[in-house]
Each structure stands twice: as C-alpha cells, then as structure tokens.
Image: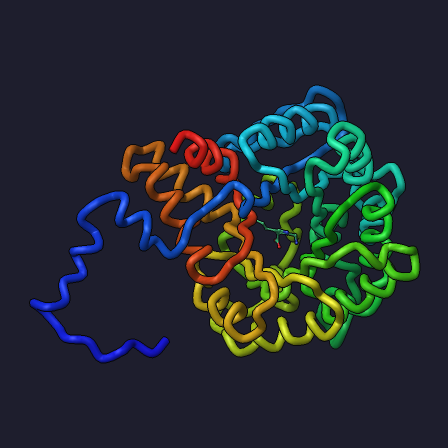
Length: 336
Ligand code: PBG
C-alpha cells in the first residue's frame, strides 16, 4: 500500500485513534465472526460414544447419534460449518472401507442431513490415512527399493471416496492427501456422477508438520512407518506452495487451504494476494493443544490468546478458519 508522505510527531500521534474503545472499533481492520469458522469433528462407529481426546480438551470422538447433539450445540452458538473425519472399525492396506456406502462418514452425513437439512454446511476431509492399516494417505508400492505412496493408483480411490460422500450428503469436498492430480481426478469423478455443483476445497499447501501430533491420536491415523514428507510439503518452502495452489486451481479447485496456519501466516498472505480466490486456513491440532496446555497451567489467558491467534489468521488473508476453538470463540463473540 502506498502511504502518502505525512508529517511525523508531534503533528501525527497514532495514539489519538486508540484513546477510546468506540473509536478503536471504528478503525478496526479485522473482525472475527462465528461465520468464519469450520469445526472439525471426529466420528466413529457405535452409539452414545463421547470419548474426549486427551490432547485436545473439549473435543471428542463421537458416534453418529452424539454427533448430531454436538452439531446442534455448535450451531446454537453460530457455528454452522463442519468438517468430518471418520474413524472406521477396520483398516486394510487400501483403505477400502472408506469407499463403502455404509462407511462411518457416509452414515454420519446421512444422519446430519436428516437432522439439520440445509441449516448446516457439511464438509468432508478426503484422505485414506484414517482407513489404511499402514496409516499413509494412499496405496503403497515399492519404488527403487523403498516403499512409498503410489500417487496415480491412489487417485481413483480418492475420487470414489468423494463421490460416495457427495451421495451421502456432503456439501463441500476437501481432499487433504497431497496427491498430485487429486483435484482433477476428484472433479472428473464428481462431474461424472452428477455432482458438478459440489465445490472442492483443496488442501493445496499442506506441510509435513509436527503440529498434527494430537490429530493423529484423535483420528487414530499415525503413519506406522516413516513420515509424510514424500507427499506433504517441506516447511521451508514458499514458492513451491504457490505452484501447488496454481496447479490445484488449474485442476478445478474452488477454494484452497493452507495448513497449518500459525507458522504459515506468510503463505496464507501470499496465496490470498497472488490468487485472490477464497482461502481457508487450518488452525491445526498442535496449535490448539499448545494454547489449551498453557492455559490450563495458568500461563496464558486462553480467551485473549485464542482470539488473537484467530484474528491473526484472518488478518493474514484467510476467509475461513478450520479450528477446534470454534465453539469457544463463537461463545466469546456472542457474549461480547
Ligand atoms: C489427513 C489429515 C490430517 C490432518 C487433517 N487431515 C493429518 C495428517 O496429514 O497427518 C491434521 C489436522 C490437525 O492436526 O488438526 N491427511
């Protein structure tokens, strides 16, 4: 932004605009709203399940019935968008159970759709890591003496998973596996099945991050060997994130995500500035757990720090924030 040349102190005193809370309100540049939030939820088979995730206080593994209560309670606070993660009863090397018409996410979607009609927005995380016995995000193969995810063999499974979720009632499809060509494969699959109206929110710039630790307990999906650095991005790279985003847009992504959020505010800012399309940021499990742990120790003011973090993510350029703080933050916004 070009700042006009202006006289310095004492003619210019920035504190004048900070003297009064009403004036501060008028000049505030970034404001959070419950509409900005997408709450991640974990669903597993069974009934009456409400199992707290130790490293993510206030977040639970839920069964399809308790999930309905949870969504209702969040919606009452103004949180109307959700992203579902499934914890299946069995896993196999190809994650086949992810594609099943009566899979856990499919059942959860049908239940929610019936209970809430169009009053909530239901997104689905599309990846195989929760469903594969080895915990990687696709089918494995041997290549030059090492085991790795077979990119192209994984694509049809992802497309099938997405179609199955769309059939069960998903409003937005969010592929997170970082496979090359996944958006194209999914777009084609959805279109061929008559779901050309369903948007894709691509996890376009997803980094191989240590901040996913608590999530892997929540979703019971840690890789059984190695890590995800042959498909998720190197945290050192920024230009590469722009290429990932450009590719996903070319393949048909309607919205793109940067993940994690806090250590990647520069990436969020660049993506918004360079591409302009709707940007989501994922305030991930480790970022959430750090705040909760410090707050429980009395080392930080939880409300203040949480709102500061969420505001910073929006200020950086995110239009929407996936966050485990959604309920708390919406409650605080409501209370004023
Ligand atoms: C699935 C997926 C992960 C997260 C979202 N989708 C885990 C991973 O990539 O290992 C992490 C979310 C979080 O930490 O809150 N691929």
